[in-house]
Image (cartoon, rainbow, N blue to C red; front, top):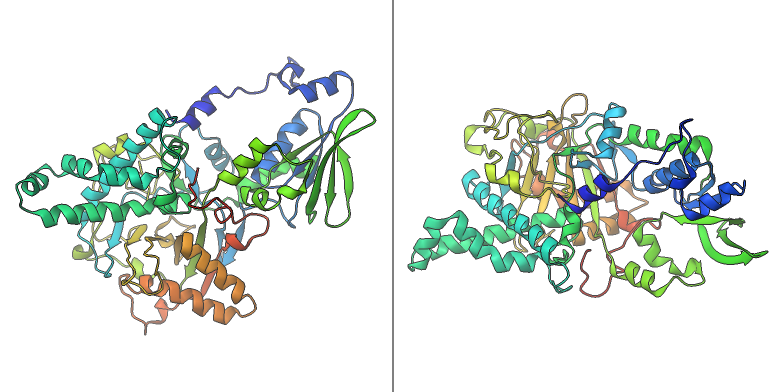
Length: 522
């Protein structure tokens, strides 16, 4: 059971009295003391993102007066949507990580939001743009995920003694040969006898290349994933579902209590958080860029890590050294999205047998710990239903539409627009169920690629045509590898493109850039 699962299992609902009201026994000390004296505490929440909205809901249930200062002109923080072409898409979270006892899934079901399980089918291109044989990728990929499962167990058991500088990639490199020897005993026996050494090396190179997928999970690179704190990435059991209908209705539901019961003030950028005593009582004064100065009994700060890294000066007195050290040391990477929409999904025509690259979920993969994956799924049935029952799904009919996932393995000479040799992944949104299916390719970007797209967004902010051309130059090398692509075909010419560029957002990111030299994502 993951630590997250343990935390959820240990969480207890608020105690209720017979009349349905919350008992003061369940309340924190400040609230309990204030309510007993007949006073109504006034709490300020900084930020109307998901955390701030949920915090407001809980406090309002306890009879607290709540004021929310939100810097933007909307709620939701990074949980927001925009249109690419005529289609609404999520700019922030896309996924539900684990379906067992997941409160987010409960909200999705309550709102009737459509979800999608992608299945295990995926296509992989090598660095030269050649389609890789299914068998070569499937078995090595399975070995890689088994190795990551071992890394989870190692991190859980030995976190206290693992050096802070040790990364997930270090673990993979150290144990790759051992893992491949288990998976390919015949080939490795031949190598031991001085034969087939090239096969051994090619499998190891492929495993290390496939391990770069982890960068898309954490918004960085596999080199910056801390092994010491790797256990933090293990999430709830069950499937990783894609939120096909977007999180719009979920956000509306979560925000409803706060919007109805709290004083929500938009476009209030906080510039000072001052703790002091007023007439013998501890108070916290909030100042904003538009001249507001107001005091509260308590303040809850729900801002993103990136904002905290850049704005520690707003706290007066200074934050305790331990908290400052934590803020400075933490990093969550930089994950962005680029949505590219077309007149039709030209790549989604039936796939001839030679191009079929789908593979089933093997028995061993069911024993790999689930992760906060944003791309290639684990524990998914080969079915669009979120309630698949077959524990060992079979390979889909080879004439069905193009798979949901495409992996592009890269090195510097393979693509001049990718000089950092980053693994690139693409999601086929035309493979989603009706009515959520759209002729859209979703590229997840991390690290240098995200920085590049953010730079383009900033540089060409006043010229949409130039920006579109610059962004497409980054992704055309991948798009051109897809089935049925020809540059002369109008169906292969994008009609719209949308990139998130969270690194440019003054209220959210970046966080990784502010981390110490040689950062490790905790």
